[in-house]
Length: 506
Image 1 (spheres, one colour):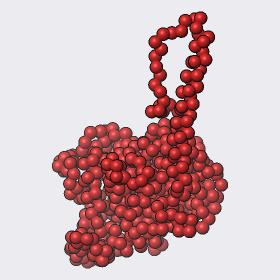
Image 2 (cartoon, rainbow, N blue to C red):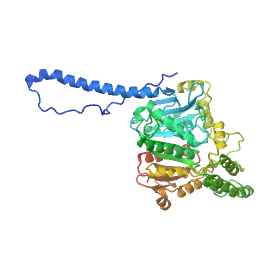
Image 3 (cartoon, helix red, strand yellow):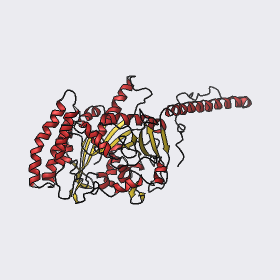
Image 4 (cartoon, rainbow, N blue to C red):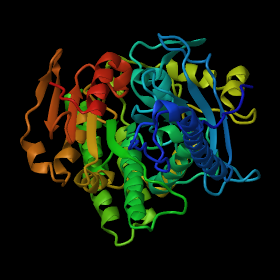
């Protein structure tokens, strides 16, 4: 087992507000008086040093005492995931969430990689999975982290996001990946857990607590991300009014990045069928005829569920059960996550990339579990069926989550969608549909904005509203499927770097 995490003193070079400012001397001591001045000078210097030490100790001790109020078990593995530059600085383990106890745990697993350059000031990207129930470690080891998964280990990743950004991969919600304990069944409650996680994470890592935070997700992350951002934003407002949660601190939420999302049930199911019957020609004529007979009932049931003054679980689940029939048609071997591919496997994960199984194996190896602080009795799952079942029992997907983006955009929190065009799971027409409908300060401009070709790929287009990389931006990546960052790693890294640094794409 690696040594546990050690709290760090505040970084050098940061001026303490308690330190007295240097005063200019009114009169320089004469040569004959310098010997008498020397003790005074060293007394002043000593006083300054002592003040700084006491202040630093007090801040460190305050953070330490707060950190003692919740469960944490953090290791610092260096050998499991090396970048092209060599071993990385990373921290992995668990943070206990509200309600956690030794007998009834509720613990989030994370793996945090420090940026290779200027980590103490680098923006932080929080990456989560989709599903609901898929592990955030998929993103980490498939495209974003310093290393890529292979069958028996990892290899350095030339297109890592960690070159310039801190990256936290989080198994969200509890029950996904290696997170374990009390589970929730809806995205709002799960978002509250993420807020709790971040507050505690920044107590363990206070040197990055004020850095810009970017939320990153895809697929069902299109439901997760706006909920997480909304909870953070609401709590920041409450804190500014003096009404926030006890001991909570402001979180510097800067923007959101979402790939191939499902964020609105109506747009999703309408355009999913259009894509599979016409754009990608996956369903045959008889299947399409059958599905188009179901579609009106699906859309009506969604509207019925959303009309209720108080959302009814029964209505949501009924709509969900009707609409998901549209996803069950025979694709005749065409892979829904990438329509360029064929697969006829009947295994549950038989048509997913083999890396998904390799990730499963990686986090189940005893030596890796030991290095990462994963308990022996916790069995990692790339996809957690029980989490999926919980969220389906609530009808969580039958909500217009995209509407949450409106207030966030109005508050200056930027929003990027980058979407693989070869995806028939969360198809791009459904994404652009809800973005057009999104009421925000940028709606009119977004509807009029041109789709400009990417400098190195005419088939990839960029629609930007706002300065720099934009306040509201949509990028269609021609060569990508559902797992667009895995399919086009170099391009997506460039997209992410432009976005986070807020510089124009074209």
